[in-house]
Image (cartoon, rainbow, N blue to C red; front, side, top):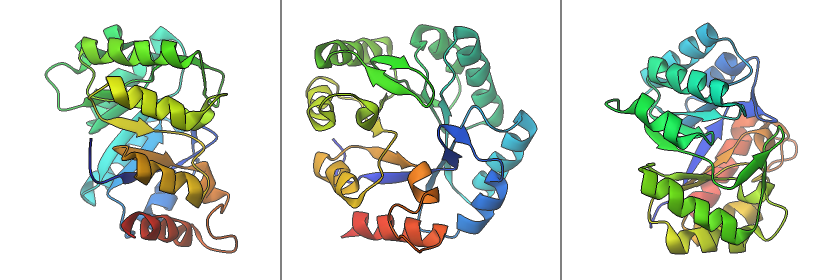
Length: 224
């Protein structure tokens, strides 16, 4: 397990890339965050290309998260990830279809595990079923796991710990990390990284603060 837990700032709200993501990135690019991400829905490809180009120009590590449900959309988003040249493709559930599409590229793949339903995405299934799925995707050759622990309808901490016991690949915890308590739990559990998007825009960390104030507060919490 990693000794450092990183924040991934997702320029998204309710699992959709925000319409002004380019402006938001320009506003926040100077913050002490090296990981930036966006979803495969919300902006046309040409806008995502511009956004991604700006991110890489600033030396950021980039993440594209697949939140669309169908096999066809998963394949389309994977091809877009390769075309854009993102560092990480995360989410999606069609692992066998995705891995051949990124073979020979530098894209690392962290799929969802468990049963994903709805949009914004929710995680369902028993802990045993989700753990079994973690072992499956690791066996298929995925580089890591994208776990919707706080979109789960049971004990998220028990779920994370159960997956960590069987899977040796890195874990991203995505979705609904909207309090300092949950940030600290990510640090305690030593997950590889966690995402925050909507909670920053909703000012969950600094009630009257700017977007940069939200990010700064979480970065400070991580560095304590």
